[in-house]
Amino acid sequence: MEFDQSIEEYLCEKRNKMLKEFSRVLPSNELLFDRWEKAKLLKCGENTTIYDSSVIMGNIKVGANVWIGPFTVIEGINGIVTIGDFCHISSGVQIVTHDSVEYVLTGGKAEFKKGDIHIANNSYIGGMSIITKGVSIGNHCVIGANSLVNMNIPDFTIAHGTPIRIVGKVIVDEEKVRFEY
Image 1 (cartoon, rainbow, N blue to C red):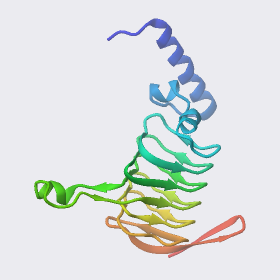
Image 2: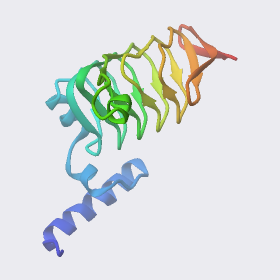
Image 3: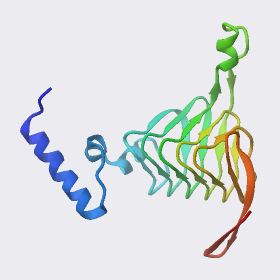
């Protein structure tokens, strides 16, 4: 498939500008669509960004100053997904309000499980993590990369693993943060 030369020139110009200003080279779709505009379209809070490569479905409520990284999936079709203010949802995270495993394994006889997901304020979700139905993550939490979050995580907690386990505490004192393991 050949593209019109003007499209190629436009993308090259955008790519070079991004490289010069931010030292990054992004996929073409990220150069074409503004991530702040995507967040506004979804009625997210002020100064929130959502990469174009992210898939957002259903009933989601996202606060202010949230960063949702590339290749993230947030599925709010079977429940409500709420993300508080000042959260970072890293690249490749999946947030899913349903679980169809038992339903599929029983040929539709078992219940299709559903549940809301809540991520409170000032929490960090590490890349490639999966957050399952019915989970709540508290304020000021750190979820390590590649974690399977299948239980509630209390405020000021560090947790990681598959399945998730609590490994430490977050201590916030004014502008300083300490981690205790």
